Image (cartoon, rainbow, N blue to C red; front, top):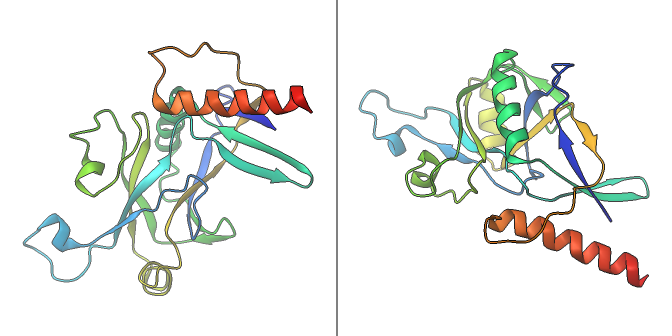
Length: 201
């Protein structure tokens, strides 16, 4: 099976167009529905209606199927960083969809950051264990229908990005060494398994 790296075509200025709230996020990380009590804010009673979760995780193989064609895609740390920056620079923070099908009003990305510390990152405080280089965001939900019928009922569990990326067909061969992260090693291991099965088949 192919492993395809998706990269940004920076000349076209295309990238992530929207953040979708979905039941089954491709990156397999659920968001955390944040309530005012969790922040211990004195001002409000009731819910703040903020969802926090991973938007993109670097070097995570994501299975894709297009008809008979099966393959994995992944994003490098550099691409994740550039995508997070371009999303805000292109003023896309109010673009949201439901299950990649329906445009939504009233959802806005209000916080955005890259995980740089596995101990002190804000995501750790909310029980997330994300690789370094992950893009995390908090989305404010000012849409009663989405909050009451989808978030509170658990019908949506995470974020999934939608946008335009260029294919970099095969990941270049990389030696496995101590400097590679656990995620890099996982990608390399999948590549090795695929190559072995192709050679034996």
